[in-house]
Structure formats: C-alpha cells, structure tokens
Length: 508
Image 1 (tube, rainbow, N blue to C red):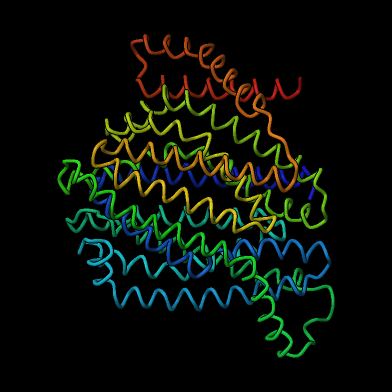
Image 2: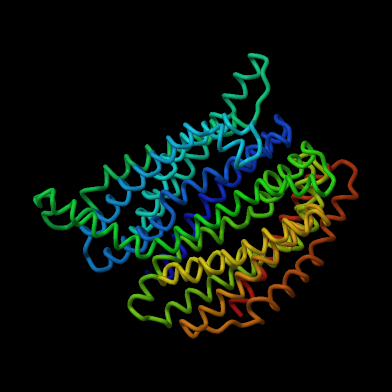
C-alpha cells in the first residue's frame, strides 16, 4: 500500500468520521436538552455491557479479518480471503445471537447484581437486540478495509448515524404527542435502528461484490466440504491473532463496566446524592468526553488506514517503509493533540458549556483537554502493534492502564471527586503511550524525535494562539455578536492557523 493509499483511506474515514461525529454531536446536544442528565447516566451505564458482549463475540476477529484479507489479496489468494471472512461472519453472528438471548432472559438479574440499579433492566433488553447487528456490521466493515474499499465502510457508518438520529427524532415526537417524556430507552431504540440499517447495507454490498472479490478462479465448482474445512482452518488462523486482542477487549470493557458502576458509587462516597452522582457521570461521559474526543476522528481514521499498510510492510520485512508510515502517523497525532489543548481550554470549554447548557462541562473540558495528546497518540501505536501481530503487548499495556484508572476511581474519587477520574485517565493513557513506543523502538529500530513530536507542536500552538486571540477579543467586545459566534470564529481561526503553520513547517 502506498502513502497515497494511506492518505486516501485516512481522508475517507476522516470525512465520514467527521460527518458521524457532527451528527452524533448534534444528537447529544438534542438528547441533553430533552432528558435529564441522570437518564444520560443510566444510558452510559448500560452501554459498557453491550460493548463487553460485542468484545466477546467479535473482539480481535475484526482485526484478524482486515489483516488476512489484505495479506491474501497481496498474495493473489482472494478465495482464501473470502472464506476467511465468511467463516468469521457466520461464527460471530451465531455467538452474538446467543449472548443477546442470555441478556434478554436475565436482564433483571444483571441489572440488579452487576449494575446495582433496577432501572437498567428494560434498557438492557433493548440494547441486547442490537448486539448481533453490531457484530455483523463490524466484521463486514473489517473485510472492506482489508480490500481497501474504504468508501463502503465509511458509507455504512454514515447510514447508521443518519438512521439512528432520524429514528430518535421520530420517537421523541411520538412520545411528546402522547404526553410522555423521552428517556434513555429512546436513545437505545435509535441505536438498534441504526445497527439494523448498517448491517443490512453491509450484507447487500457483500452479496453484490462477492463474485468480484471471492476468487479469480473457478472456486465455485469446489465441493462444499472444501469451504467447510477451509473455513474452520481460517477461523483457527484468525483466533491465533485475535485471541490476545479479544482478551484485551474483554478485560478492558469488563473493567470499563466496573468503572461505570463504581464511579457513581464513589461519587456518593465523596458526598453526592445518587441523583447527583448519576448527573455528574452523565455530564462527563455524555457531554464532556464526546466533545474532547471529537478530533480523535482523524486519528481513528488514520489508524484504520494504517493497519493494512503496517501488516504488509511487517510481513515483507520492509522496516524502512514501516517506520516512515509510523513516523507520519505519530507526528500527525502529536501535532493534533497538542493543538487541541489551548483550543479546548480557551474556546471549546465555553462552547461546550453553552451548547449543552451546563456549567459543569466548562471545568471538565478544560481539565480533560490535557488528555488529547496521549489519547490521540495511543491509537496509531496500538494499531501498528496489532498489525505486526504483537497483540499481547497491546493487551498488557491496556490492562495495566485500566488497573491504574480503577485504582484511582476507588481511592482518589472519594477524596477528590470527579477530578480524580480525570487525572486517572491522563496518567493511564500516558503510561500506555510510553510503553508501546518503547516496544516499537525495540522491534523496528524506529526513533522518536522530541523536537518533532512535542517541542515543535507546542511552540506552534503557542504562537498560533497568541496570534489569533486578538480576533476573539475584538469580536467579544462587539455588542451585536453572540458569545457562541465569537467562540466559533476565534476557535476556527486558531485551528486554521495551526494547520497552515504545520504544513508550512513541514514544507520547510
């Protein structure tokens, strides 16, 4: 895969990701205004359970499908790539359906024992129906990425968001006509509708493209026994790579589920009531984090496009090309993360407080802006290690980071409140980045330039901020302009100046 292909794939995923994030952001603003923050907190407590179930059903198999589809395509063995994908899809669909049935049958027990809230029982039932469709979407999207059909994967994401938001708007309208208020179940019904629509789109695309990408030979004439035996072999091959990733995802999401339950409990220990604790948790996870992680759309897209390229380079022992691709990804991630700190601290915090109509968002965004560089950097690092087959390394680093966070939730939040959780996030992601960078240096011999990764972005961000802050102050003093317009123009000018300065310095 050439640098042009990486950039093309990154741009496609970035554009679709930005569209999805914008739609999701508008959706969250709408939700925050039609339902209490405590309902958002309940919604955020249920979602980790669903993600945990998806990790069990799919986990690292999606990464394995992308890796081996790309590898078989490079070796001109499309038939094996198709069988690998098909066997994984059937297996994951069956497992996810079984898990969904178990959750539906035991929703009251799970809600009471594991979530410590009987209010989550009905929400779990709604969420469980979406698990099989989410798994189908995940596996097929991974297959498309391996084939470098980034447009289809992006289209599925956009369709999911459009249907989800449209359905929620419709459900809210119907509820209001009947004199009812929207609650967490409304958002979950929207997720279910979105996953169904995206999985149907993905299946239709696979059926349409199967003859083109299955094989170049007359594989259809082979006996069904061939496909069954080959499917079992390919599933075993996938699991050899996927097992550590699946274990990583499972343990990670299991701990996140503990986090979702423990965090409100620790806030009660800190001195808040149950309602206040759910509200604080809902503000952090439903308002602050989506705003702060909005720019991560770019790094996530880059990581997806980077995976097949790193996989091919590692397989062919082309370490020079691998290191160049990795250096480009890390430089972009660091520059974006450091640029976001002053952007969120001075512009994003006020913007978030106004659009969500919640003053608590302002303080949380300013604190969480410090997490941007390490979060954005960890994404391409983990993607590169997974592509190289070093999934155990990613598993160990993620587990240690999550343990740090859980320890801080238990021991720091009762004394420092929600700020203790924020400090834990920063510390855990910083640990992950340092650990994975050291491992990559040992494996590939790549070098990290402090000047390129940290010093230059910091200097550029400071210069761009002080060069553009007069624009905001001038607009702020104008009597006819609302504050949100001043924030948008000031923040947009700062972003534009940062991007231009980065391109200019790279050219130099």
